[in-house]
Image (cartoon, rainbow, N blue to C red; front, side, top):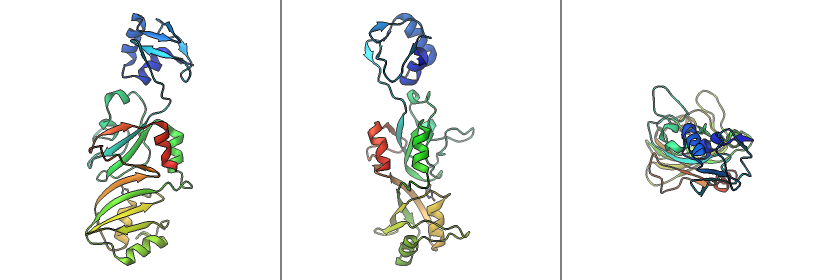
Length: 233
Ligand code: URA
């Protein structure tokens, strides 16, 4: 059971104080009856709540796709630098959102933010091996030796072993890389081990979920539960 004022402040754009004022004014019904007590308890997943005559949809968890621009930290909060959570619209800020998986500050592209700890844990669990695809711009074209080294699981300069990965060279100095794990600076370090240098890195997809091409850098959108779960397909 959850308090009505808390429910409204997490499921709508209202702050807790605004929710309290609305409830006291009689703008809220629960299961068809007006409720003027902000501390009234309801069952979040089954209660039918209206606010100013409109049904309030219940989201247990939020799943958000963001097109991360360069220069933004992939953490929830930082005292000195803008983070991916700072880019989200105000209405999602009352939820405790965090990025499920990290990108480097200068990497762009798809980031998923959620307040569902199990989802993030499942996605990052080494045994799940959720594939992540990246568009890579290199200082020079990826050669056949690099493709082979990625495929057989290369060893980084510090001796760390990588799982087999796919490197598909494109026109010019570009390539698409698919990883099944997420070590620190992994793609940069993999190309460095092959004598190449990553100039730019952009995440295209995670599992079955592709970055929505209509999202400009810095833009985000809410995913349905079903869309969010395609990460595991
Ligand atoms: N590999 C990297 O080197 N950086 C990223 O941000 C993601 C994968």
